[in-house]
Picture 1 (cartoon, rainbow, N blue to C red):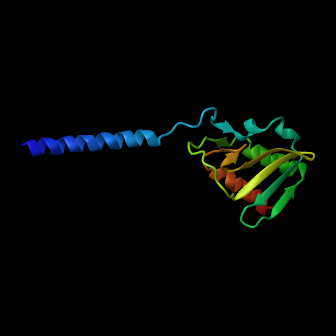
Picture 2 (picture 1 turned 90 degrees about the vertical axis):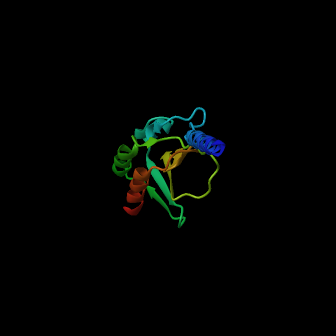
Picture 3 (picture 1 turned 135 degrees about the vertical axis):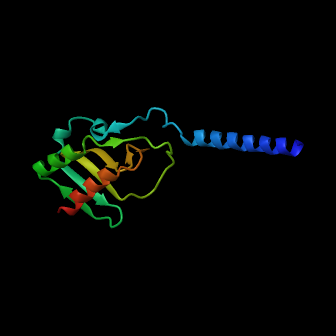
Length: 138
């Protein structure tokens, strides 16, 4: 009989540990990071962006887009895309693509599908596809 209670006790303890483990894996985002849309990161007016540079992280190839209509059309497609903070803010290396937005010679914003301003966000596959489409269009 005592063995049965011991087994039940161990089972309950194991279930409690499992529940505690599940709760701790759902970490809150780092202090100050909130879900934002791309345009909210831009320090100014996106309509003033006059060119975009995209670098392919696997080849190093850099492409520049200066056609005002193409630039603004692309920005209108991606401006509302959301960046949800990644609870894991450990430093990472490498990128698939990064995008720089310019006004004249001033780079105003650099982002990837998972990083903005040195902070990490959950990977945005839709944004990656839009970047790839623009990159492959020229």
